[in-house]
Image (cartoon, rainbow, N blue to C red; front, side, top):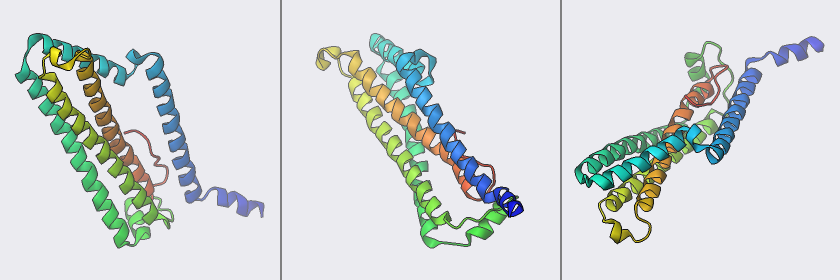
Length: 208
């Protein structure tokens, strides 16, 4: 009885589940730490430094009156956010279609992994992945919206914006940047998840 219990604890499915739960726990702990650090000392985070850089960029562009340079930079940001949005929606629809069609998930797991494990709820996992990629698409689409709004605001004279001035432009641009970051992160985080959920023991979801 003791030997059977010990052997059951060494089965690959159990270790795969432990690895996935540990990965999720580490990811959540990391995000909570970064969120707290962003509130206390934003200059120590990438988000905080990016916000400061965008603020300096807006101030510089408004001082120079260089609408062409501002439009070119915004165009690059719009193109990158649009590429991520297209990637997210294509992956979401493709995985959703695959989940509805069904398939031999055990054979797929054995093909992709050196230590295949049972993957009975694979269809549900695929639906979750599709939903997460769709969330990434929504974030990138919102980033596109705020980038376009920034393009309108930055070409207006400060007198036309009332008391807000550059602050309104900076806030809109920072909102677009944060949506773009979250969209990119959502796509990157799903890559290890897709690898782990396909049956590869030890793969856990987390940032790429």
